[in-house]
Amino acid sequence: MSDPMLGTFRSLRSFNYRVWAAGAIVSNIGTWMQRIAQDWLVLTQLTHRNAAAVGVVMALQFGPQILLLPLTGFTADHLDRRKLLFATQAAMGVLALGLGVLTITGIVQLWQVYVFAFLLGCVAAFDAPARQTFVSDLVGEADLSNAVGLNSTSFNAARMIGPAIAGLLIAAVGCGWVFVFNAASFAAVLCSLCFLRVRELHPRHHASRTRASLAEGFRYVWKRPDLKAVLLMLFLIGTFGLNFPIFISTMSVTVFHAGAGRYGLLTSTMAIGSVIGALLAARRENPHIALLLAAAAMFGLGLVLAAIMPNYWLFGSVLILIGMAAQTFTTSTNSLMQLSTEPAMRGRVVAIFLAIALGGTPIGAPIVGWVADTFGPRWALGVGAAAGLVAAMIGIRYLVTYHRLRVYVDAGRLHLSMDDGAPVGDSNSKQPKSPPLEQTSP
Image: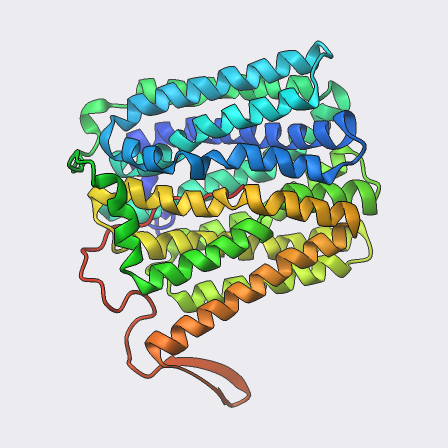
């Protein structure tokens, strides 16, 4: 029988990666617990089921990804990532503790949640590129792609566990103590950073410190028609489709009249599909735009099905499909972007990816929240579905334009092929390949 350490879980052979992964899973569980508690606090305690207010919180939390983009990627490329993560993780723990104290004492107000969401977004804007690119410091080049897939698995396993625990704790002790637990969970990742064997970290090439280097990431992406198509698809789905806190909370409370526990269970259910997608990503090599196109189409159709589901359990079952499609899309987008990116450009390119993936939230979340309040949660799901299907059409247009996509039916099955015989990725770039980075989602 083959050793799984040599396959899907081979990155765990590295001591530094094992230590990092152990701390990260605890912290990720706490983060997902806080997200659920924060949305529930706003939706049911600080407002009267106001989905637009949840959208504003999301906008403030993810907006800094765009506002601080010129600095975040540059910082991840030039500063010591381990020391930077010490600062960002500690700061996020302090913010979680502050919000917890306000909530437990009963003096929390909606504007205070807005402020904490914005401050957390500012810190996370620096944390995310550094945390994701830090994987390249932990493992060798041969295992980096696998480590990224395992990171995604860990993130989505926490997404499966955290919301379920949060739902139980909210019902038992209230939202404030969930925030305090999240604050404590940051101790795990801080300890893991302390226990790393610094001498075994893999050295990396530092980018040159020039004024023009801030714009190099944008110029690099602009010259790549494949990356521009992928980022446009990502913008549509990230802006209007990845608003699950609004979709799930409003469907739970308004349509199915569920409590906090069943709300958390729905989020955990969707994470089952995300974990499946992440495990598949750990084994997949060189994803193509055709895969991204299929994932976008499946995402859009999944939201259509979710919008018409008549009861709680059928809605939850469709969330598994949506979670798998969303995970496949975001991971494949990240991988496709990074496979030909120079190591010195990694931080800036992933910052652009994150800014588009999460930075569209300030635009889309309030709009989706308004649609949910005005027309109902099912119509809000329809907005996300339309975004996924339009993104799929953009992928088709790129393949037709640059790879002469042919669609034909043989033996009753639909087939796609490229007349030029080139792989469905970048057909022009001469950049050396580098492994993909970890995906993210709001």
